Image 1 (cartoon, rainbow, N blue to C red):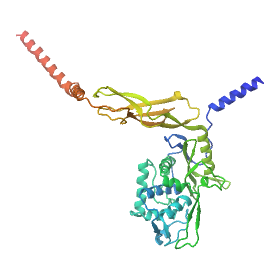
Image 2 (spheres, one colour; image 1 turned 135 degrees about the vertical axis):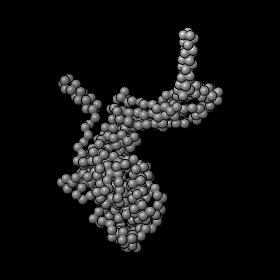
Image 3 (cartoon, rainbow, N blue to C red; image 1 turned 180 degrees about the vertical axis):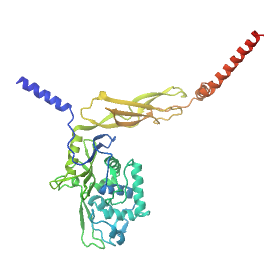
Image 4 (cartoon, rainbow, N blue to C red; image 1 turned 45 degrees about the horizontal axis):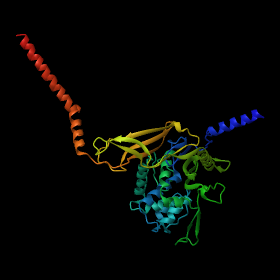
Length: 414
């Protein structure tokens, strides 16, 4: 009995101290990452390219909202534009010459994956559809998604349109900062009242099954984001969820259909459970915490200041992480007085097992006035001790000494 007891204790200790193995992911591309510090918890071909499809609409929404578009603005569907749309792709059935608000198009695009709604939004921009797509590419680059290129606002299949799982994580992380977009993505059903071409009210259910309560895949912790399906390629899903003050983003791309079931949802669910089950967001540094000190050569009444954390530093780490393996790296600037309290004068970087967990600015804990006498003295010291001054001086002295030896030598040998 005692042996069985000790065996159970051993197994309990062993299983709680070792993180679970990552789950099987059937999609060929996948990423799971913490939004607070970009720490990647799982990766699979995250820098290999694939077609974004419906995920393009996430960037379309970002550009539309940041361009200052009036969401109450009426937009009438141009017949030629409607005729050019591929209605075998995701759509909400907008009719030629139908008038909808920009908000209706935004909702249909983000919630119902309507590609023609995205194209109409892009066409209503002052720069037109092509100019809008240019803005999408510029925004992707600004966010850091440098391996992403768009050719349409609706995400129509195109070999020249590509992205990566890592880029989509960066775009998702950026999109989550927009409260309007977050609200739209979390909407279960978007309602469009009758228009000049539709006599009935339209009810558009969110294609993201994680946010629809009536569906089996519903998850109350899910914030939202975007779905995509390209015939013959597979299912792509970008999802974000929050539990225990930790927000994770998961992207799986080109997941297969097995047994009549879209495998993107099981992939994301397994990865989310793995992430939340094995990692937490820990506060590693508190704002105002004293980290180091910095010498100030020209300060009045003091020759140093204390460096304190300018913000909280939080990072995703394994639940059973070893604090001894946290490595702090401090970078201090060459600061001179005058210095203001709270002025950034360095950075603190914390890494764990070779991977950066997060960074925080280091700021001065007090103001320091300039001492003019010290400043002049330091300047003269730098001048007279600099190589530009000392090198010619040494050469001159060498020449004088050489000349003196030469003169003495001639006197001796007369």
